[in-house]
Amino acid sequence: MNIWQYLALFLSVILGGLLAFYVQRFSRRWLQVILSFSGAYILGITVLHLLPGVFAGEEVDERIGIWLLGGFFIQLLLEQLSGGVEHGHMHAAKGPSARFALAVMAGLCLHAFMEGMPLAGYQQLHALHHSGHSHGHQHLLIGIILHKAPAAFALVTLLLTSGFSRWVTMSCLVVFASMSPLGSAFASLPFWSAEAQHYLLALVIGSFLHISTTILFETDSSHRHRVSHRKLLAILAGLGMALGTLYF
Image (tube, rainbow, N blue to C red; front, side, top):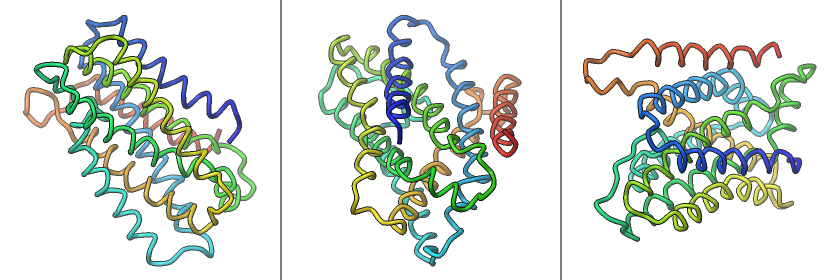
């Protein structure tokens, strides 16, 4: 990855989190709308680009499916630690508990580190399996940014409402913002083969499938199994943006 891509990953999370310091009355409904947009986009690029890419090439074997399932269920386990902050759940603690903060940070940071890893070789993988198509090679980076920025907003809101100081909250935000760039840097080390990059991407695809479907299948607070007009429009916009990556 280029330096600007590392900066984009880091700064998007910082900006998303900083917004929560100054917009305390931001409606959770609007956060769900934003997450619905990002979830639809992530699902779209997963189906249109990531799955076809990971199942193409000489490196493919039956283990790809195992890694994909592994990513899905690893994300399920990580959400037991994070409490679902990745998709807008903000169940505040009764007080500033270190155990609570460590659990949330462990779930979020492991997920963010894992997501960043396939970015190291994704442009080469995309070019290899989409010869003649130069567009859309940043869609994985954009998908991670669209997912991480609102997650950072939810993290900061959760920590502040749980009674943590602004200094502790800001420190947690910086650590969280560093995870995806660190994951990409780690995967850039020379001992990672093309086969390993395929497996890493399959792992992240499984994670993406879990997160995107969880966001999209969650109904409104009325529990009437209905989707609000705002959320429906956000989903359609996210899918439209994903479809646009096929042409632009």
